[in-house]
Image (cartoon, rainbow, N blue to C red; front, top):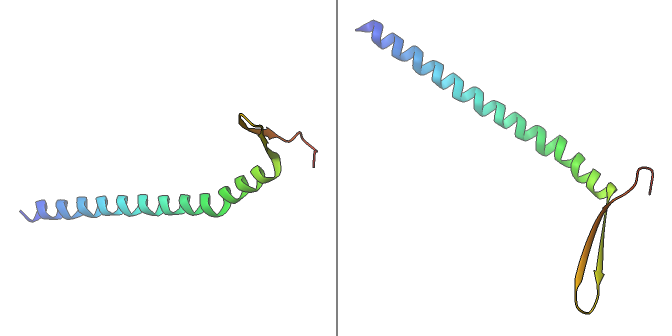
Length: 72
């Protein structure tokens, strides 16, 4: 009977360790995304996209263009 209890405790510890590892990996990846990747993407969008708005009497048109390389 004590062997069954020990196996149960070990399996429970294994499961808890797996859950904790998953939580830490998710937290790390979220941190990497929000603090490193996302700011770079936002900056790239600001620098490389041109958004024009054309307002005529009957319609409103939004044009999104990618700046050619080297264009300021």
